[in-house]
Amino acid sequence: MKMKRSGFRASPSTRRWVHVGLSLTPALSRWERGNVSRCGLTTGVFRFLRAWLPRLPLPAGEGWGEGEGAGRLGITDCFESISSTPLSLDRRGPAAITQQLAVWMLAALFTLASPRVLHGAEDGFVPLFNGRDLTGWVPVNVAPTTFTVRDGMIVSTGVPTGVMRTTRHYENFILELEWRHMVKGGNAGLFVYSEPVTAPGVPFTKSIEVQIIDGDSPEGIWTGHGDVFSIHGAKMVPDRPHPRGWERCLPSERRAKPAGEWNHYRVESRDGRLTLAVNGKVVSGATQCRPRQGYISLESEGSECHFRNLRLKELPSSNPPASEVAGLDQGFKSLYTGLDLTGWRSEPGHAGHWKPSDWTLDYDGKSEATDKDLWTAKEYGNFTFIVDWRFTRKPEPKQVPVLLPDGGYALNADGSQRLVEVADAGDSGIYLRGSPKAEINIWSWPIGSGELWKYREDKTLPAEVRAATTPKVRADKPPGEWNRFVITLRGDRLTVVLNEQTVIERALLPGLPARGPIGLQHHGDPIQFANLYLKELD
Image (cartoon, rainbow, N blue to C red; front, side, top):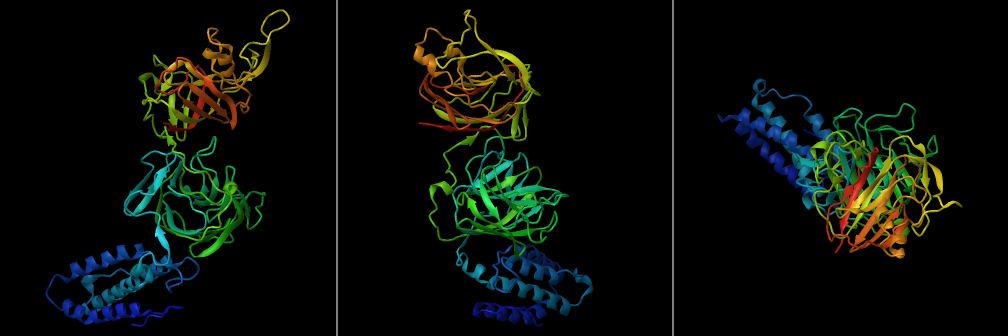
C-alpha cells in the first residue's frame, strides 16, 4: 500500500510508528487464520478506531489537511474516506480483513505520531475545555442546565437565551473550536473581548460576535458562514463594507456545513485585528476592535448546539490601555435562571402572573397571591444589585405632582399642588431588606425613578434625610425602553445609579433592618425585569 499526501514529511517518530504498524501485519494475518472469534474482535477494533480517531486534536501545517487551521478536518476526511465503504466481515476472507485492519491501524498510528499527540501542548495550545466538566467557565445569565457536558462536548440547550464565559480575560490569541447545530435554522455564537455581565436590556454582553448560525438572510444582510460583528457598544471596522453600513463583516465565501455536521473555526486576535477561518480558510475579519481584550463567551439562543475541541494559544500582549479592555469580573451572580422562579418565593397565586419568559421575568400586574410582591428566597445584608426594567403597556396621559429637589411639592399661587401631564406607563419598585418603607420607586413622575416615597414623605425625619431620598436628576428612558438600576446598600446608606447617572447618593435610611429579602413590587401594572445580578458586600 502506498499513501501519497501532498506536503507531508514523515518525522523520525512517524516513521518509527509506521514501522511498528507494518510489523504487525504478519501477526495479524496469522491471528486471522486462527480459530478465535476473530470477526467479533475485528469488528470491535474497527468500531473503536472509527469513534476514536476523529476526536484527536490535529494541527494545521503537519500534512494532514489543506489551508490554515485545517489539520483536524484533513485527517478526519482522510479517515472517513478510508472507512466510507461498509466492511462485511462475514463475506470477506481473512486476507481482506487483515488488509483493511492494517489500513485503519496505520491511520491511527499516523495520528499518534503527530507532534500534537506525542508532545501535548508543545506548540503552545492549551485546552479551554477539558472534556469532562465546565472548569474554567461560568454561567452569566443562564440556568445551571443550559450548558452541560456530554460525550466530550459542551452541549447548549439554547434555553434561556444568554451566555457562558471564561473565568479570565484574553487579548492576543489563536482560538480553535468545532461546533454543530442540531436543529435546522439553529442559532448560537462565540463572543470575544466580552464584558463580564450582559448589557442593559439584552441577554448578551458587549463584545465582538463570531456568528454561529444555520441559514442565511434572504436579504443578504447576514449569513451562516462566518459573520463577524460588533454588539451592544463594542466597535470594529469590518474588512469589507456591509451593504447597509453595519459594523459587520460578511464572509468572502460560503464554507459552513449544515445542521448536524461539524464545523471548524479558527479565530486569531492580534492587537485589535480579528480574523476568522471557517473549515480551513480565512473568510472574515475586522480591525480596530474595541475592546480588544476581554472574556470569551459561548452563546445560547433558542436551540441545541454542540461545541468540542476548544483550544487556545496565547500570543504576546501589547498591553492595551484601560479604555480598550473589557471590565473584570466583580463577583456578580445571576438571581434569575430564565427557566423558573428558583431562588424566589413563588406563592401559588403568582402562577401565570409572575412568569419566567426566557431571559425576561414578566409580570402582568394581576397576581392572585395574598402578598402580590415577588421576594427572593434568600436574605441579604450589604450588596450591589443590578436590575433592568421596562414598562410594557401603552403610555396614557396623566396629571401628576411636581416634586422639588428637597422632597417637597411645587405649589401654585393659591397653595395647591402644581400638576403636569406625563406619559404614564405604570408604577412599580424595588424593596430593600424586606422593608415596605425602603422601596425604590419605578414610575413616570417628572422627578424620575429612584425616589423613596415613604422616607421622603415621613415628616418626622430631618429635612436632609428626606431630600437625600429624592432623585438628583431624572435619568429614565422613554416608556417602553429598558432602564438599568445599580443599587448599592451598605449599612443604612443607599446609592442608586439609573442608566449610568447617580440619582440617589449615600442616602440615610433610618430604621432599615440589617438583613432581609429583595422584592419586586406589585402595583397593578405590567412590567418586565431582566439581568438581575447581585454581589454581596462585606
